[in-house]
Length: 296
Image (tube, rainbow, N blue to C red; front, side, top):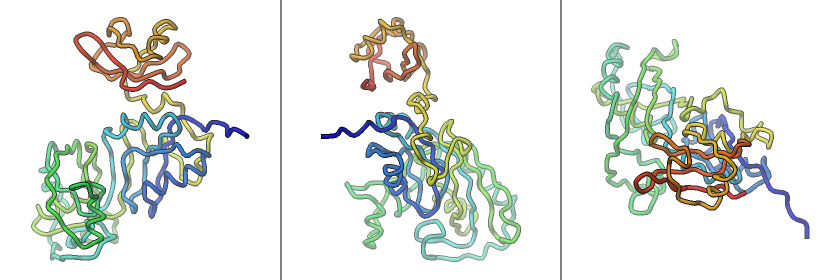
């Protein structure tokens, strides 16, 4: 019996094309990379494009540290029309005369959404209610109450939209994980006394990973897999000597001082040769413990 060679381990930053679900990208990447071990962090809507992080091989276990990262987006908010999906893929549910709304009006309304806010997730989303995803219920024509969720809008810049599009404004958003830009656009429309929907959404960054780091889906191959350490570059890093590396490899609870960990953590633990060994987190008192040990 022949043994299949191990696949690559690490991170791929994909520029997701429009019309693909995040799961579609994962499925395609499995074939391109020659491994079943591919997962993603931070779902993108099918019509949205931009930064999608893929964990490959042993790096799939690192996705938990990537999903909570903040996000940045740019998109177009279309005033005067509401849709079932809150974007231009849905059916129109209401129209409003908002011809008199100026850029200054939109800027003022948008400013009230900067900071901690609450959002009601759209029905067409992956959020689960009583064990079922909302988009599954929406396909069955079922609408349920959704509790509001706290999110934070760190920055929101409004500029004019395309010159040939009336009532369209470009929004550039930096926000916490879990924020729905579709909902933000709809809520701004309501604040202006009418309604709105979103189009041409593009994710420009996930934490420190930007479009400049990304590759088109069709160019994904093993040569595009970044090292495991790239998946934790946003964490504080601690380099340990060989003796401590042996203790880390078996998941020992250690004194923070022994590990060399300072600050609040979590910490990416690297060998002297630069290999990722584990991720440690605070434990009891002055000790730290592994939240993940990378198998060798």
